[in-house]
Length: 490
Ligand code: SAM
Ligand code: SF4
Image (cartoon, rainbow, N blue to C red; front, side, top):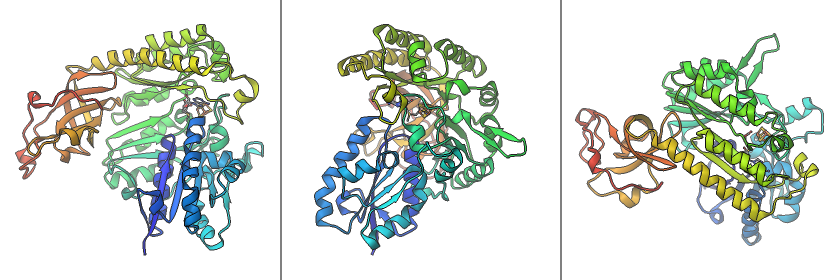
């Protein structure tokens, strides 16, 4: 009889990748995925601790499962990832029905933990050391989880995340990541290159290299040789079949000229840089321990644009951090107004027990002020994003087609093409009409409209993009701009 697995994921790309790998390893043990938690033999939650809201979601989901677990005691319930590493005691107290608590650095053990929980009916714990222990021991206790890849795990065959490092050593005062993901450790370039080759051989065209501070990547061989991100990009660049290399997330202070030169020189390296600023006020940046000033950030932005013409830059901001005054907030607004960011992710400060920020500073900005600042900054960023997107109107952009857009079903007709979505090398989302069979292919799209979030256009191609009667690629013909549906919201 097949065993059924339900897995819910909260959080960042790193968690999405971890979940993909967990699913892959459990599939090899005979599990199939189910969409219904109550239908599953094993229910897993891959969790996030970056903000309180993410944790609340998981406790609510665990609460809803309490009765189910009572009625089906053989069902295994597991909490994985950041919350597991951070709060094992609290999880045991608030959700005693949980059978497995497995931290970010122990995911390789999961199949064995499930078997042990089934056999013994006892709680299984697999956690890494906390960062008060010796660096060497803590590093060893956080294992990079990189089992063999399997295309059936990924939502898309032609795109994949590749982890190039784990952990973080920056210790920004608001952030829990260094505690729950351990010390910064870079994977050997040869392992990364082999994984990229395997992915490309399986049809993967775009890879996104992942690291909390991906541009801090450095691998030391111990004999004086060191490989940095710029060299890693060069090493994997010529992988057959690979078309695009993206990398996230960059730390402003580690944005070296060598990396910017590599992005400019290597055709497959995408001119897209996610470089979170977090605040535009020096006092706040200092309390955050971000290790740079706003003047440095501005100069870095200028350097990115000079060295990589046409580069798109995006950012993250936290509003309402301890001690953020109206004046400091205004400085952040100024930075966003003048930055030309493609987009920004804006978060209300959420104090995290276990961080220096929580220990040292009061959470003294009221919730309604955080909310208002969040909305105000979002409105400014939306105007900046609109200007950025509108600059592309009239241009032809290269789009890797990801598939039907969210609105495709509503708009599809029996005879017409459907609405597709994809991204440019600069990470702009593009929506246009075409045949679903274009999914996974790179097409040229002429942009004819834009919102703050999306470019709209029509495929410029010799290839058939209609939905019916396609015999082979020779019959392909372009679809006229006029036949596009009215502007969608994606
Ligand atoms: N490593 C990345 C970096 O250095 O920018 C991102 C890590 S974090 C998972 C993603 C974003 O969450 C951060 O850039 C920050 O804006 C936000 N964040 C982190 N801790 C937060 C907190 N305590 N409250 C609100 N937002 C937070
Ligand atoms: Fe968190 Fe700062 Fe590390 Fe990013 S660089 S993961 S924000 S501590």
